[in-house]
Image 1 (tube, rainbow, N blue to C red):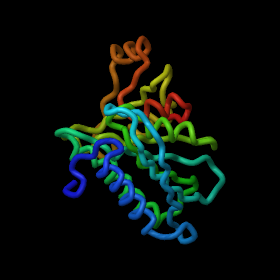
Image 2 (cartoon, rainbow, N blue to C red):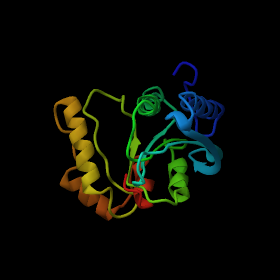
Image 3 (cartoon, rainbow, N blue to C red):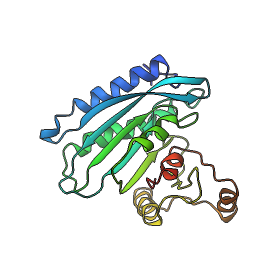
Length: 214
């Protein structure tokens, strides 16, 4: 947070943080010894400040079976007073990498660090279009550190529909175990509004719209 306080999408701090994320995950070990294969994808995407060059970090760790992979995604960029707390998604992404490198998982794990999550979700949308193999499920980590409430599970899509109910229930149960109570769920009025206006806040929106189930 001290090194990269304001991370406008595609800006210098955002891109340098992308390199830091890639270097940190790659430094955990080689794929042959349980580590991740890491690459950076450069794209052109629309943001609140116009079209910008954005960096997406993709780190993949093979599972022990041929089961469909799980994607865990978080955006780095942010501007304004909540820029510090929005780093919490990236912090969790890096901690998951450290934990997983010492564990065996049946499914391949794909960790993704995107840009433009604070304005337009261009990084997440591009990743969704580039993912050709079937994905069992995706989790988009939002502003986890904001406030002291139990984190919500948001399944709304940028199109009709949303995440599979099994994925939503699994995440809600896991959060409930950690916090001692179930996370809040959207009320009927909110669900009805989404049917009328299928727009979503959060990077799960474009992932769900592309069929990744996030």
